[in-house]
Image (cartoon, rainbow, N blue to C red; front, side):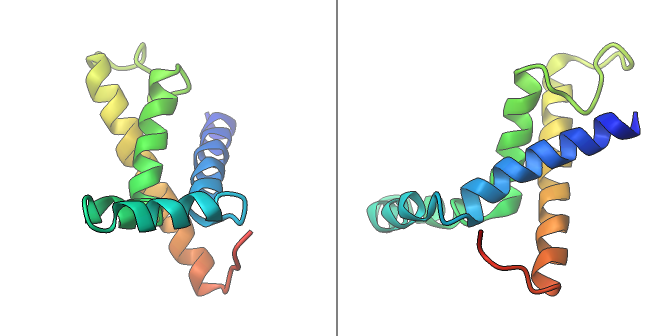
Length: 108
């Protein structure tokens, strides 16, 4: 269980960090920030937000079958499992991001 949790955490946070803070996706973030600033201002902050992106990554991971919450262990409908995974991913990504910022992490 612990190994699954750590693997899930590293995958979700890794993808979130690549999308929100890496130099690799900096041109994409810059383009989206310029392109959407007048029509969709909320989307401009979305591409820089580890909480937002982490939530969606967690939901997509859950839909692809890589879930933190095991549906067979709980009698939850699939939609609740996807939401729980998304919320857990967002919280974990935000927590790791805040700790990293406090420790002085730099852009990749």
